[in-house]
Length: 322
Length: 307
Image (cartoon, rainbow over all chains, first blue to last red):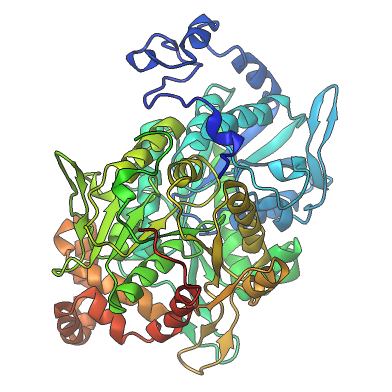
């Protein structure tokens, strides 16, 4: 059996300080690493790209992260809803950045699946979903929409850096950042760079589903935010309860056996922004790339989402005025 | 480990199956759990390896939260679910003291942890199946596991999806990953397809339906079957965890005691269940026959033992 090229590369040592570190090439872990001399000879000091990132993002008013330790709880769905809702206010310019590199969902949810990205002298242009709603995602750069992106962390980090440095957003009121599940490279990198920009990160919205298996992972994400010094705007419980369209009976599909999102918010002393009930039409609208909020104004889920968006706006926009 | 032979710690294991999905929260860990329980019921000896490092769910699925894994001179000793030692589990969850603490690791560290889990665990001698549960995506963990298993000749991968297009799209990426690293695809499981209303028995396709089947047909992959949303399975898992209550933080215990009055009646039923092991509870559950179709579809492929 032949071995794919991917495996023939030298691996980084376990405690690799990273080529951007002050200790690159000098730490104990570097002894014996094939790249030691390269790392050692790299220019040291703060990342030279930081001023470029600061400059590129200087016209962005608010930066909001959407996080969850758990996958499939609705990070991208909520990101798309939040973006549609914000962009429905014509006075706002909204940008969306999809950091989920191995499984980007936003292009489909925002109905821009087959677009490609344009590069110009001034950098990459986001794909515009609407006049005031732009999106950037790795999906727009793939030769074939089903191509797998089999990348290790370091490669993902450099793409994220490009997203921050080279995307020509123009002036934005909001940059909403969707993340992959977990607490790893993407999360460390985005926090690392954004915390050094003007205004930093306004805060993170955490999403969970009601069952303990999900809360368990979200608890980890909360701890990560606390450690990393990211402000938490609040917690949302998604998929809480399902109303049968036939008999209107409500079932708790994902049972909050330990009190659900509300109890977790109380435990950590963070704001509970609300619960969004399951509505089969949400999934359908996302698959078709349409705005659920516009299509089904009468759904209880629409009310819940708009209420959450209003709370977030009050919180985020209020802080800058004061 | 020499570069040209499979890790020695896996040498005696008869079958290795991976559970993969590009998408998160589609039920990889649930499928892993059910696959393990079903195989144990069929009389096999099963090991479960959880390589989701930043969000390990497997300890909770098996009711093993708060247990620790120990290291002996020869390597890590798995945690056993049952007294007969038919089902053993390895997860990073057993190495983190506090269940809430996060592991914010970059790639190289994750890689080295996975390498340890592959080459440095003392699996029981006569293990029939090793089932590997993975995190979502196609990144460090997946590259590492593929690298470690490239000479180990694993049986292949079970792909899990939910029916909606957003999820199927990510699973297509995972399929491409499998082709690239030459993992055989054992088949696709469509999870969460339909929910049967407990009041009126009307089946609602909350996350639409049929996406997995269509995907399998398009790419000529085995379709292993679909699983409905079954709150009783989740309940079984959660009840099983009530036993290890003393590990839960204070507030959770409080909120549970608040509801105590409503629960008094249920409590008696639960107590009965508590005495049974998870394997026995699963044997009685309504989802077991549904999942059995999936297991039979895998077993009927007749993949020869690695040993």
